[in-house]
Length: 431
Image (cartoon, rainbow, N blue to C red; front, side):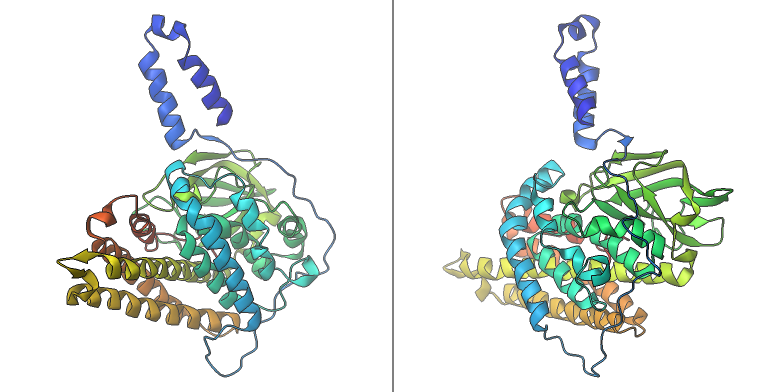
């Protein structure tokens, strides 16, 4: 895209353009290209190869069932959350407005985020990570802490770990050997879990993207929408309907022929640099199928992704609460703080109440998931609360700030736009 913009910009500055009457069309093309991005081939910056042979896939064991439901973080979890919270406050929050305006994270921010080692928590020690057991609760706390800084940038930061987590959970020994070493190195690849499609009332279990068998493997055709960091991603996990048998997951490298990317700016999550992933006659080897195409694997992935969005909603909702409390206490109208007004006080209290309910259900679902217990009910509740109450909290935050809630000087309007994505997004993150 950079080369295309450069060429068009030089052409727009040429006097020949004026004589030919093409000034306005070319200027319009430059503007559109800057705003929406050209459709370009995917990033092809590395070749994924096996660093060593694995006799069998490495999996994380379920967490110990203590028989108690305790929300108190362990010492290790507390240390991780404090580190991530500090990073979100010092790095994500100050960069959020600029990322929202420019549709991309600031230079170097995501590499600094990778240095935190967020993806290492979900990768077993024998593969170079630091994981000893499933860490869904830890991942939920990390997602919440990042989203307190900014939801869009949090999605950009967490997108690669969604892919590495899926590989640990369902990848075979060859897939793990090929791809996971890159996620424990110094240069963690941009990667994305691509489930979303541009369709009203989209059902992730009925993808329009199609996969058919070929003598050498599979062929994929379709379009995925709102893929985080699509233009930079080197590896995708893509959902597709496998010859009418149901949804399945495929590993797609950006260097595969037929993979192109198109910019897709959205109402929210603009810091995540979302884009469309076009798949046109993409040929994949037989080993690209993740989890054997099993429906229960796909179901677990969707549930854990929705749980991730619930955790992100809780983090941004907490940011709204932490912002409006001092605002209503300091904002004076008619000689007293507006927090003295019953309607204002009750609205703030409602935000706090709904937030605690959302966090409780989300962490309960996460605890059951990491212990290997059934958690479908809890995920459904967390998804419902995140969708309804998250949007309600965002709206209440804007309302409590009055006219200030409608301008970009205050971050609440951005959080409101981001929270509206919770109810429509599938994939992208994974706990």
